[in-house]
Image (tube, rainbow, N blue to C red; front, side, top):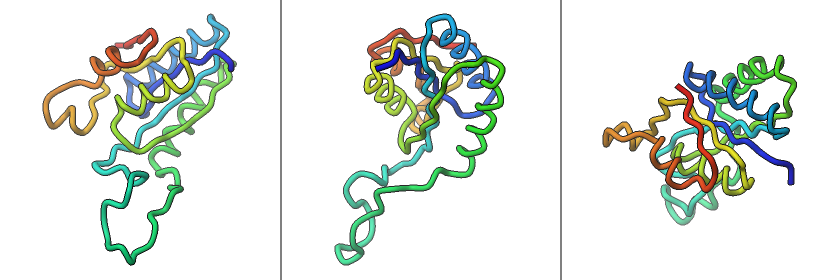
Length: 146
C-alpha cells in the first residue's frame, strides 16, 4: 500500500490552506493524498433503518455525491493541479472527526492534515472543536494548519 496523507477538505479558506500544505508534504514525502470531505448528518443513512416502517424495504446502500461536495472536489483538483501529486477524493456521511480518523486508520496514513476551523455539528452545538478529537484518536501525526 502506498504511503498516504489524509487531508480534511470542505472548500473553506482554512481547508484550502490545509490542502496546499498537504500537497507540499505529499511531494516531499513521496506520498499519495486522500482528500476527504464529510457530509454531516445527524443520522448516518448507512446504519440500520432509522426511519419509516418495516414494510418500506431496505434503505439504499449507495448515496450520490452531494452537489456541494462535487463542487468542493472540483476546486480541490484546481488547487492541486500545479503541485503534481497523486490524489484520491472520497466523501462520507457522518461527523468530521470520526470520518477523518477512520480514513487515516484505514489507509495507515503517515499524516493527517486539517484546517484549524473544523467544527462538526455536535462540536458547534456543544462549543467544542474537532481538532482535539482528531489529534487524540488519529493514530498518526496530525498537522493543524492555521
